Length: 480
Image (cartoon, rainbow, N blue to C red; front, side, top):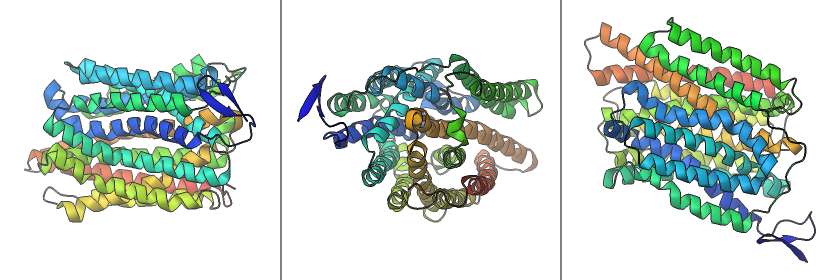
């Protein structure tokens, strides 16, 4: 026996599995795939974007960083808004806004238009993702189906990177980089139709308050940190334009924590991150993003500007990353509900660190098969291993905090991506400039030297992060 709500037929027994749950998984995975696709497709198209719109080298990172800032800085607010207005409505608003922002980016004729569209993509993505994870957590409550659902979701996210690099190469080579933005429109339409058909309307949470002060402090703090790191290369680490924003960022984030401990409806309840399993998962995701996104950024320019690969050939060169990621997802999914969390997170981080260490050995005349492919495979394997574990751990047993707890996974990833890209790009640029001053070298040699210095630093950071996650998560923290 069923009842009808809107256009969806619901089971009369609220404990019965939703008969459309696998269609719902398909719809929300497609929605999140659009965001994952956008991350890699823009990386491949970035050199063409830079030439077309005359972006400077220091400014090109903002194409990546502005999206990461808007997305990561507002995900927690997006989680609260999802509770306030309902998951289904949040999904539809997020999909529509993301599609319109993509259309603006495709039509960009100035750097300002492109950067504005990337920031807006981040804003609407921040509303979309928490609803995706909350929908998965609410729809698949039993352990057996939960592990399967998150495994399928992780596989879809893994395939998004491969699809993104291939599409990015095809569209940039045979059409124009603008189609790397326009491609989001049909995906958004398909995902929206699936959401309307399959996602069960959920009642709005009662008593939800939007912590505006917390949102402003968190976003301002992150933006100030990223801006300070970005100014270190052109202005120097001791310049007021570097030190000032970094100090403001730290103070704003300290104030954010203070506010969260005192307001009635905090943007991020401290109980969410003080849980040892969740806290360790968030640190792991933050750390992998620092290394992964820097590796993608460096290798995109290495393949196209140093080795002379076309965008399409560069996209195909990225496929081992996707293959490694999907292997990691397949390996870890059966272990989610019975293995200690730290035994899943720590090996993943160390695998990424080993890939970054190999990237630190690359040279101008390095070959793809012996030097680049292993980097992609190892970084992809570790990323799949960590992300699936973190997504499942964060939302397990979170109750009323499910949307925020899930959003914090992606928040950690985007904060790591934005800070990591800004900081490691600055380190790479500084090392390259120093190398040119002391060596009679060509620009490609100096650039590769900068990439290797930054990559080795990122590898060391991931090793320290793995140790911290090992200590934080404790000795017996299985997800049972």
